[in-house]
Length: 177
Image 1: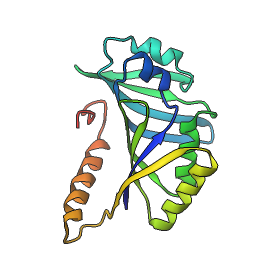
Image 2: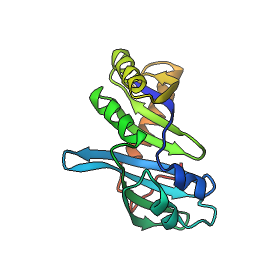
Image 3: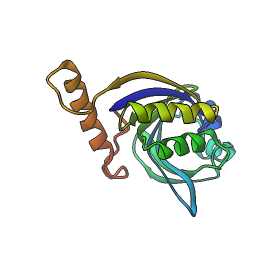
Image 4: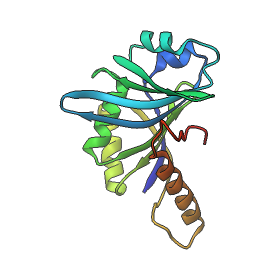
């Protein structure tokens, strides 16, 4: 099932404040035993602020690199420290088989589209977030399987959006949805 959720995370908080609430869309989170949490994200509408300075001053960014630039946005890769709340959020999702399909921020918090195997997994994910003192609220849930109902139309369009966002972000940005 697809879950739309809101979470108050510290991810890029200094950057968001310094740039006047830009639109930030995370394309991917990943990690490995030898690699800390890594995100790949677009920053759009930076309000004329210096993105490099903002990222360098951001306590939730251990290291970053600009990967690509388009006329209206820049694509970055960042590594995040183990004590950042986004790292806890990601760990909660991995341990409960929840996939972060998209994360978007243009204010003080983050909106997430999550794929969750079932309601039981969602319950475990929420419990893990509570245990990690993460503020998570669910906006909506719907089945990601096509059905003969109004929900199936939303499911199909959402699935198409996620499929498109998995393309090579450097050559075909999907941040302008």
